Image (cartoon, rainbow, N blue to C red; front, top):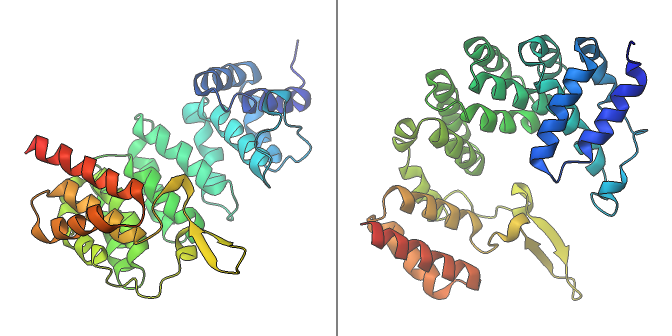
Amino acid sequence: MAIDLDTAIPAVIIKVGGLVDQPEQFTVEAKKAAAMLGEEALPLFPRYFFGTELQKPESLAGKYEGLGDWLHIQQDAIFEIIYNYRKKAIPMLYEVAFGVYDWTQYKAVRILTRLAREGVQTEQIVDDIISHVDDFRYEAQMPTFYFLSGLTGNKKVATLLQRHFLENLEYDPIDAFDIFENLYRCSPDVARRHADFLKAIARGEGLEGRSPLLDGAIGTTDENGKQEYHWPGDEPVEEHHQLRAAIFYYQLNSQDEEVNRLLDQWEVSHPEENVRSYIGKLRGEGQGES
């Protein structure tokens, strides 16, 4: 008996999405869904990317209540199902990845790079993403750099990331830092050639007057009207980027005198206790390895 895709597709999206907090089951159920729906479903998935009519399942009651949360989960469920079509999904993924920008663009790129890492048309996918990424909007471009960095040792990816790192050094050292982290993930040897820029960030160079809001911090106002900031994941607020850079450099070279002087200061006098204890633990581990 033929499957009624108009009924079956929404049902499996809701079922897979409802397992978002159970990664193994999420993956297994998405694979089952692709097998059950068949290839005829592939061109139909995009109509559900922004399917506000799909109701959140009871398994997620009380969770993901923020604006767009459930919609993002729906999209992640759809792309996890699409992933299981493997090579056959690539033309449809290209249409999304290289089409007009929306929330789904970087998610399509994520699946393409995942397939490329697994040896599915690796060279072609890398070449095609590289040929388009310069035209991506910032919101899609930065995640794309991260996804590409998972292709460790790929010289074309390393060249792309190095170019964008150097270009961003001219006008945004923190975007350059983020790209540097991706470059290091892809090609540590290439990244190490530029590692001294981390010490400039650690010293605070280029960060004068920079608002934390520019880099993803969340701003709140206390009862006295004072603006306060905090970072997702309880990352430190004070000297946030300087700490990131110094710690990264320390992990590359734990004997550097300048970085150790900065860490000495923060380990003793940083206003956040979790930062002081983290630095102490980090350096204790480093001394144990030396």
